[in-house]
Length: 112
Length: 115
Image 1 (cartoon, rainbow over the protein chains, first blue to last red):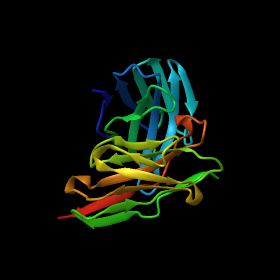
Image 2: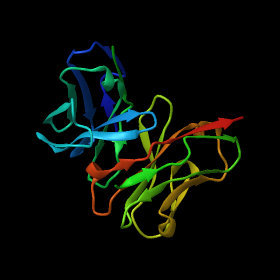
Image 3: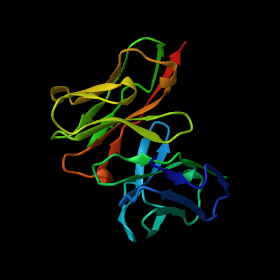
């Protein structure tokens, strides 16, 4: 079975802390994505990676960075967490840019 | 600007009733169209997709969707809803020849099912 695993389901952090969200896929997919999900706004793309060490900004990259050192792992980094980054974060991967997206279960981050 | 609209934020239906969830998009050319479902506490799962060809698309869990170019719509339907269908449903669109870095999601429709 296809699997995208997000390391933390729930996190609570304080303003100014550095936050790492990890995502691992076991499907040898080239493409990996980080989305942010907020009520009434659907999903918005933060960053996209199409290969190891390659990344592209999505629609809302401000305040975030990413790292892809290995094909199976894509990390989202909040250098200095702020309360407006409280949200659900979803990682996804796909074999091709128009193939099926496979999602992880999400990481709900609360920044106090 | 390109957009995807799901006009209904919440819908409640009785178990066994039929269901239609609406989705409209604003693009010049026919885009790639998707419906995803998110069960409580879960990630999103692909229900069905339309790239070209037959405008009536069958998906998993008994869902289907119809692409209507003239109305710029891609509505999701199910003839008889089960309690397990309670979830949030997202329509998503990629402009023709675009990739997932261009994928745009609607705001979602939350479905509640009464016994």
